[in-house]
Picture 1 (tube, rainbow, N blue to C red):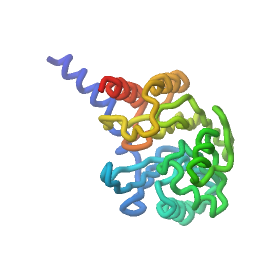
Picture 2 (cartoon, rainbow, N blue to C red):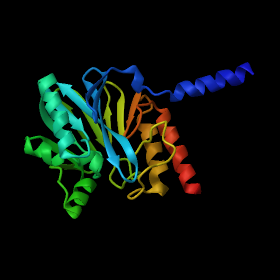
Picture 3 (cartoon, rainbow, N blue to C red):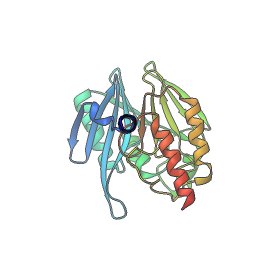
Length: 248
């Protein structure tokens, strides 16, 4: 009985939400900023949907030397402006750039606003092609499968490992902090399904996740596109959900 109890306790610890461990600031009822470490924050925005009800979306803010880079925006220009206004007022930063995870609204919904304030934008070529096709705001700088950049001596690695949640989803790795932003490609521990599958590639999704596992075995924190921050267990959990979906 004791061994079963210990095993169950260890399993529970693996999936405890990490978000509660980090200080957060409620910007308004629909926006929150969570401080992970050093210059890295998670921005969380809430939206109301007829299909999914009220749900949250995650992105990242990196602050260095009075400048900031966003990874994904909230779903609207209005929320993106609210987030940027807070960062400018309280951190005294200039918003320099956006890295877009894929072409959906929860990544580029605020791109028009960012362009209006002079921010640059980076995305996978697949994302840019789709934005052009759909008549959406178009990121300015394209890359194929890999793009590394230095933001005030902070290395940021962007990678396209393959399709999954969408045909164009990328990851963003911060090697100094060992933080991986997986976006909607990676599911939170609380997720019981894969969510929006309108652009999903179920057949190749697991292979894409396995490539990420191989590339970042030392990831300490993983930020999914929705839900709680976690660790490397989120990758295994996502594969489990994919296998479940294939059986349905």
